[in-house]
Amino acid sequence: MHRNISRAYYALMAEHHRVRAAHMKILARGDAMLERKLLRAKEDDEAHIEEVVIHEERLSAAQRRRAYKLSSYGRKIEKLIDALLKL
Image 1 (tube, rainbow, N blue to C red):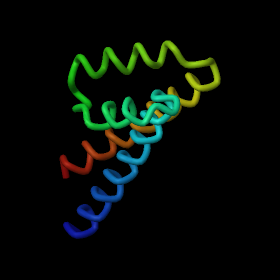
Image 2 (cartoon, helix red, strand yellow; image 1 turned 180 degrees about the vertical axis):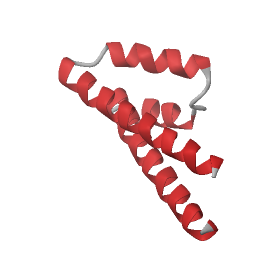
Image 3 (cartoon, one colour; image 1 turned 45 degrees about the vertical axis):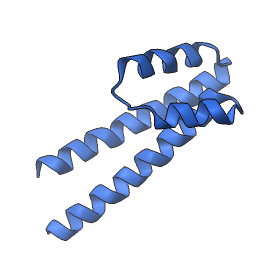
Image 4 (cartoon, one colour; image 1 turned 120 degrees about the vertical axis):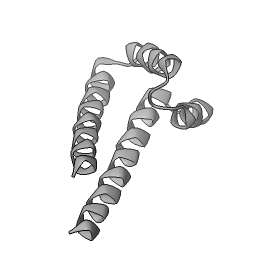
């Protein structure tokens, strides 16, 4: 059982990293340096969160919707990861 939980955890973490990378790519709008900076920042850092919000406000409506969907999906994955860690 432990092995299956471990596999599920690593699969969810990989998916979380892919979703976060896609979200930061949308926010960067083609700026590779900004994308790298956003990806390297800690997710829980207040300054990083404020910077992400600022960049989200600059997006078009369609891009903002896509970023919101990715963010929502990422939060769902985080909840699943938290539930796995409680097992």
